Amino acid sequence: LEADVLIFQTPGWWMTTPWQLIKYEDDVFVSPELCGGDGRTRSDPEKKYGSGGFLTNKRYVLSTTWNAPLEAFTDPHQFFEGKGLDGLFMPFHKTMQFLGLKAYPSFMVNDVFKHPTIEADFKRWEAYLTEHFGQNA
Image (cartoon, rainbow, N blue to C red; front, top):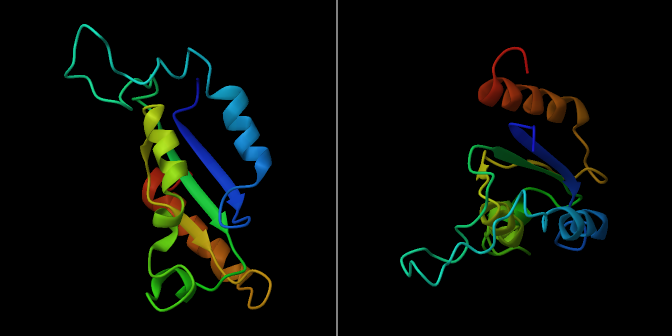
């Protein structure tokens, strides 16, 4: 509740997040302090499903690591059919939206086992942090 930004760093695990993160969501996100229900009320039919989260002044970053190469996400003829990371992780993003959080652009590191580029990936991460959070990030 005290954080301005949540950073979720997770491996891509069987095309989703590991069960430990899902368990965290199950245990923590049901708190009435985080989520005020689905947003709808009987007295105001204009309120829409998914608009009840209380974290509307907070943001989050999805940062993931994959053994899959970038092309597997961007090329419509490869495994993820060009849907990209955010298309694949739409349920995660919808969970954050349900809580009221707004997304920063997602960050992804690819090919971590077969063709790692660790130094370049750290430089990209540092540039990402600087771009979105300033020089002292």
